[in-house]
Length: 226
Image 1 (tube, one colour):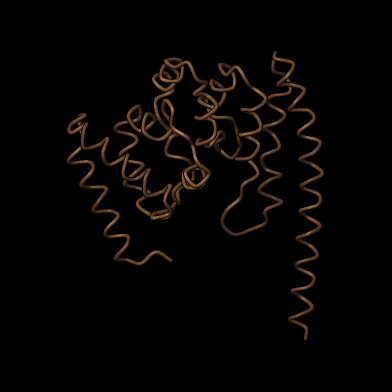
Image 2 (cartoon, rainbow, N blue to C red):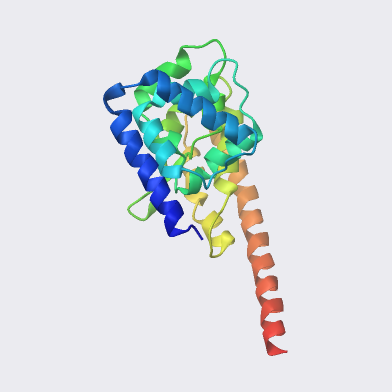
């Protein structure tokens, strides 16, 4: 559990960011902040539980600068970085999922390398909307614009399969099935075929997960009976 002191320090850092870096002030210092954070994540000095509000605030103020530092030209997106960001820095969504869509797409297009692939690896591609689940506009644009949509879809599927917190993992995974159904009518046959096939595999995986949870609960109940 996060201590009251840690919460206080995190809130203080976030407030400092809002004061010191608002109105695009101190961009050079912001670049240093992002660079240092990336270095510390890659070297296992900090992780997803450290400074989530602070980093999210900084990314919202300097989205393109943050993209340059974390996944820009020639930058290797290492597993520990993906894990920290896709684990949402203890938030419900990746801080990169809420950046301005149009500016982000322009940033992706302004490169010879496929930045869409890198971007897909660090965003949360889905969101809840009034009790239902849907793809985010950014995720759909990435899928539409990338030269490798199937690789993008595999990244999205990996994000969908992750599950944190308490409760039934099988139920959480089952709640994401509509995402596959939404893509089955896509005009791109590669995408629609992938969605159809992936849904079938996903259903089998969910059934297995329910069975595993049932067996686990049975064992637990038997232990209590002793």
